[in-house]
Length: 157
Length: 194
Length: 277
Image (cartoon, rainbow over all chains, first blue to last red; front, side):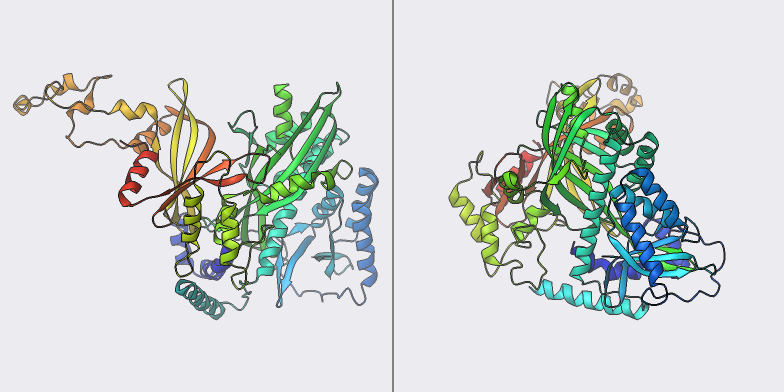
């Protein structure tokens, strides 16, 4: 998959142009060129107010991290669908809601991170259940004011 | 050789132009990222295999099978098809992904044994007119099914699986996340002689 | 039983934790065969160019092995069909020497204009299933590339527009204009020979007829049967690729025809492949 990288700069420049220049975009759209690249998967109803400080799992929330990782393992290795579903229900309780976004980094180098398609905690935990694997560890948790996780960033083990 | 140098030069120029307009630039010439995308694609192929195992397993409750079918379908681009041929007939038979899953659920093997060979081939990613990238992952699998009346069926098939790769952006909690969308497309299934 | 076979053929990808396994041991030989097989056109190109290792992993251009001449020679020697072919070992060696020539090596490229695919398909035409050949080429479009239909060959078209010449042919007489061409009524009849009333050098455009008939539903696509690829990119040479599905190392996409051709032979060959007169 080499040829992609020769084109990435051009592609990125195009992305930039598309997102910043309306008239250009109109021209491109008229030609039915690239599909809409901007996808709103998880619209947040409230405008981005002051973000809560990101909690470093190394520090105060080490316990939370451990609890969550433990759930990942239990769901992946559950003896039955019921057992897995119970664990999923409990684990979702640690989050603001079942739709809390989950970002998965599949590659990181030189200070940049490449993400897989964002998912939600409910879908992610079901993924672990279905595929019977727990391939990721917690990289970052963003907490809400109730001390629940409102956003989770994972990375490949 | 000159051509090669020219390619590199033009690439450097393009890269510089890119850095000039965007500070979020990432090094495109990163063979490791390339490999990571390959692995991600392969991972999705394996995930599909596991979803299908659940759908095909007679012990899976109906509601679970349906939920898993939805998840499996999410791996595919809309309109994706399976094109199946056998040694006996080179003619390709076409099935829609959902139709395929439903046929699978209706299958009545008593025992199924699936092994897959440790041989896979991942093509280059090529850019298509709409700007998305497309590649093909090839894997091989040995199938053995036994019906209740002890009818045994065996084959080894080659699967050529279309992979689409696209860089997308989404808003999460007010910030823009760029991600690689890796989805599956049409799958060609051909029986092999091995 | 046939139904059973069909059902299980489509039953693929079942990897369960209890019933699936990566094959080891007794299947080592099969894995070696699959590894040796040229599994994709992509792999044919990479092997031809010396751009991947034996496991199919791409070399970076700064790798010492990348396009290495010795590696290419080794790969090239396994890219020929060795069972059903009449390619002489002399031709094979000459070709390998030519494409690996140190000062002027030849490489293949997916985006090149010098190759095309011939896809053997089946269409439903007036109630009958008939074979139809599609000639496919790759072209640049917008942000990338696409495969397109460059031409077709279809038996019913071949004679449909053959016009008669000479004294016995039907014609519109040279004073027709004085009658306001009223004789056209007798010339243009259903099932008639309207091609008789065309210029001496009239040539039908089969692709346009094909597109029209597909649009009108007269031709209905049924299936793809098999395909092969023709290459004219190596100066002075022609070769074609076919897929060999067999249980040994010499399988997958392999060179099945190889010819040294000059310019006029190339034209003749193209006419033959395109089934043109």
